[in-house]
Each structure stands twice: as C-alpha cells, then as structure tokens.
Length: 260
Image (cartoon, rainbow, N blue to C red; front, top):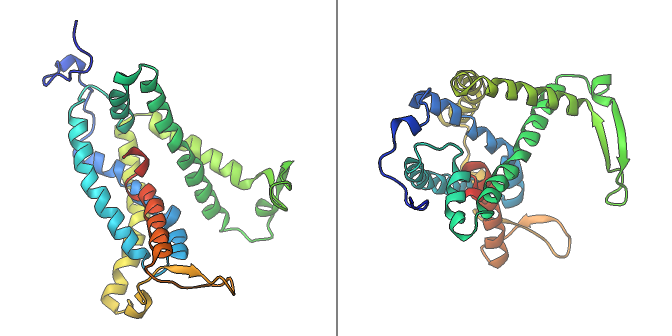
C-alpha cells in the first residue's frame, strides 16, 4: 500500500491538471492582488504615521521572499489545485484526518470577508457618483437595531448591499466560465485600475512633487495621555508595538499572512 505522506516525484500525465493558461495569464490573474493595498493603506497611514511607507516596503519584501517557498511547495503537487489550503491540509493530515479538511475550510472561510469588503468598497465607489441627497444613497431598510452595542448602529439593507450583491454575482459568473476567461477579463480590469494608480505614483517623482519633509520625523504616532490627542511618538516599546501592528495589517494585503 502506498504511503500517503510520500509525494511521488513523477506524476502520471492522466493525473495532472489541465494547463489552460500561460504564465502571462497567471500574471494577470494575480495582478488583482495589489488592489488589496487599497483596503488598508489609509488605516496604516493613520495608525503608524510617517513610517507607514517603510511598513509597506518591509511587508512587500517579506511577501517576495515567501513567494519562492510557495512556488516550491506548489511544484510538489502538480495534480492538485487549491493553493495554500492544500499545502496546509497535507501538513495536518498526519496528525488527524479531520484536521486536513478543517484546514482547507478555515483558509477559504478566512478569505470570504475579502469578497464582502471588496464588493462593498466597489459599491461605495459607484454610489459616490450620485448626489448625497439622492434616493439611491439615502434609502435603507432597517432589519435590527444594535443600539446595545453602539448608538445608531443597526443591521440594515441599502443600495450598497444590492450593488455589492450584483457585483459578487458578476464575479461568480466570470469565474464559472473557467480560469482562461477569468484571466482575460482580469487583464482588462487590472490595466484599467492599476494604470491610473501607477501614473499617480510615478508622475510626482518626475515633477518634484515628493517632499522629504512629509517623511519626517521618522517615528510612529502616539496618543498623548493628558490631552488624548495624536502626536509624534518615539521608538520605545509602545512605538515598536504600533509599528508591528502596522506590519500585521499590511501583511494581509501584501502576502496574506494567515497562509504563512
């Protein structure tokens, strides 16, 4: 009987996955990941302060080095799909068969909020084109009051919900047609969304619009214990903890820290 923990070096062609995309298609599929930076770039800048650019630099370097490890692991499973969830399942199966599927389920369950957050943000961008007093922005249906948690907090359905749901169904329809079709459509979205960001990031470098004073002092923020105002901190224990927290948040956007 074959040992399930021994990974064969040669896999029969009949067991391999069908290669329907090229490396270029794979590049365009993964090009959607940089947009995750938009989810947390503002929060990190507001939390960490001037060193936030260094947070992103370090986080990207970690993700770049980590990609080599995942590429090698992926090469061990040419007949399986599922990415990091599969690798985790293989690692856990020796400790219990029930742990392997739980590992797979937890990985994708952990990523499911990305769909809600992403479509919700997209719906917000779409609604920003309408006047603040228009019906499409003011209409809402309250389902449950959550005042016991926070004042004026409630569970409700509004235009954002319906637009996000439509976007989610569109994404599902695109992916249901296959990876090749999804890669081609993703290429269009990637170019249309990332190109403006690249232009906005590069043009200031050539026009001298980058001011070094905005990066100083290179210390994290802190809350004044007396005035309760946000002010310049220092690289003490609290400052390092705050910087590490920024690294933790950035890790979700740059290299998916929960898969490490």
